[in-house]
Length: 221
Image (tube, rainbow, N blue to C red; front, side):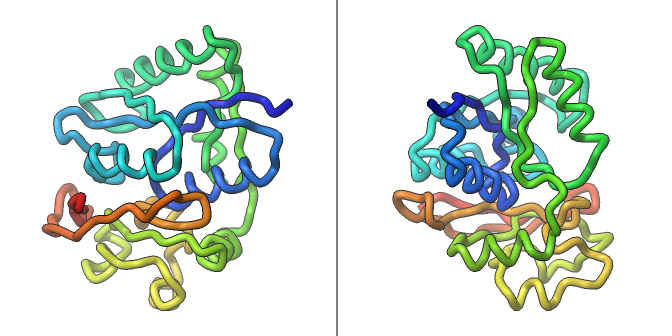
């Protein structure tokens, strides 16, 4: 019988790739997505995607979405406390594992594993150690569709935000940018692909520069 797990969800391509791998393995049953929402912006932490969009995405994937509301970004004391409480709630229901889409940042993995261990849980990292260029190629070849919602202006210019992630996008990335944006070069929102019951419909809105990051607003249709 597959192990029941909860999934640390951002709505981006790495989360989606990890979910795809988990489902293909037939070893796990994802009972819920778990995501952090910035309550001051009503958007997904870091990615800048509206809560209404991430909720619609979960519906299109056919999965429940557990939302944790925080007033600050990731890896703050408040974030840590509230995410731990949410994980503990799943732990009391017999869930002992949380899946993440991390690829190679050992310090982030250690942070997650140490916090989960405090409440008798463990992390699962299906993408860990994989080659970024191969991962994003597999993502595109598998039929997933994603749009960039946030880019770091210190690495990428404004033309990279609000772009569909395809071969042309990858070809135009500068040599110092990770193909999966694992160093924070860009974040994305996946709106279609093999696991989706229906496409997440949206229209692009305003592009703004905030704290050296360009954000492209996605509006539900």
